[in-house]
Image (cartoon, rainbow, N blue to C red; front, side, top):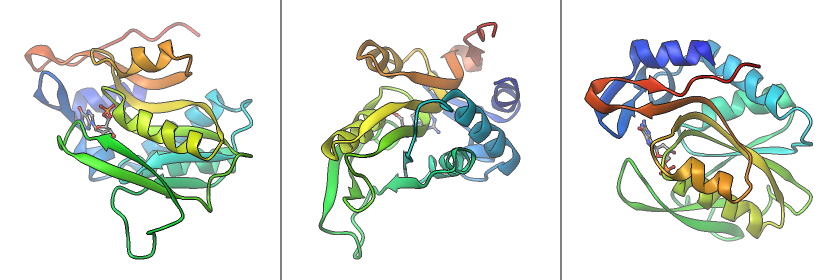
Length: 194
Ligand code: 5GP
């Protein structure tokens, strides 16, 4: 997605050869017009997959997931990273190692909102080593629901998550794939011709 790539080049800050900061439009301040375009693109890619729910992880996945769910006409669920007072039992839970925070989070979703009838599109802001995606897939499988695929805003293609998930036969659609962040230079995978 060209506009997303431009935004990453113009506003992204390379923090290290493996981490990029995009706080100005995705992870802190949010660009709603870009989120709308992202949502429409994911909705187009998964239009024929019978999606009934979009599932993401709080907090940075919520904005693009919300716009995708709006375009698909289905609800969005965000898995919580902490158990809240109102959400303690009756949960599907999974453990996720956070790439950016280097800690283990227990993620959870209420059993009220995922069932074996659901066909779920999993969405996240970044794909690095695939731990967040694996945890979300685990929640969907615990519910007996099916995974339609993975919608990723920014994939870091030099980390193993994308390859691992695709090898498992999971459809992964990324709107921008970064192949390198070495020397403070952002390099993208070339988009395939339509
Ligand atoms: P994974 O679980 O695939 O290793 O990492 C994905 C999660 O880590 C995403 O939910 C995202 O929040 C965070 N993440 C991974 N790499 C980056 C990065 O380079 N920049 C930012 N801002 N977040 C990242």
